[in-house]
Image (cartoon, rainbow, N blue to C red):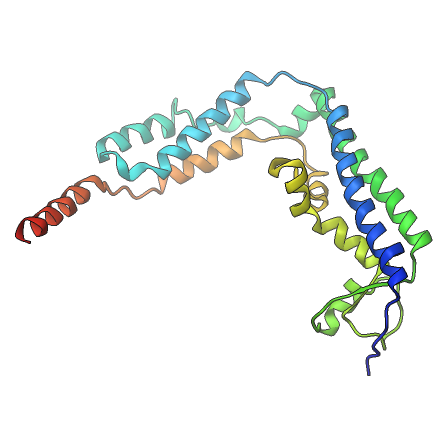
Length: 247
């Protein structure tokens, strides 16, 4: 039988609110520190050109039905030609993103700075939470949950008799760590709202591989089924005008 606990208001004032405020302040501070540590690099002309080609091919694919079939086939041939198409990348000339990163020391340094700006604050904050707030029941979720959520919401509390809806201080730290993206999007802007889950996924990345983007857009253009919709618009407009004339 799960027990109901009465949470002291002092836990809210000295555990729950300080944890939330500190996590928000650390996220904002980490953003500005990483922005100051970022080194300015002149963009590579080849990478910029390939990015613009991908955008143009994507626009052609999304608006293909608004141009005649002959025009669409000519544009698709211009992009997907196996000899000199803009989206065609020969197999031997595909860039190696990992080798590109190791050949550019600035890129490796920027990646190391980003990883340090994520790891160091998380380590210090977790040590602070684990030392001062370990074992606290910080909050209660206002709806019932199943037993599968116990390990996620009651990290650091080894009591099976406590109801699953109660949240420990350590679990509240992890919920704030991975759940503040919406708040950061309001404070820092949508493009700066990358949460720590995405940063962890990018820690093992080695730069941008343009050949994959070009190949994906090439395959997307190849499978487009063209259907010119403008003649149908004319027929629809003519039928509407006939109805108006009859009325």
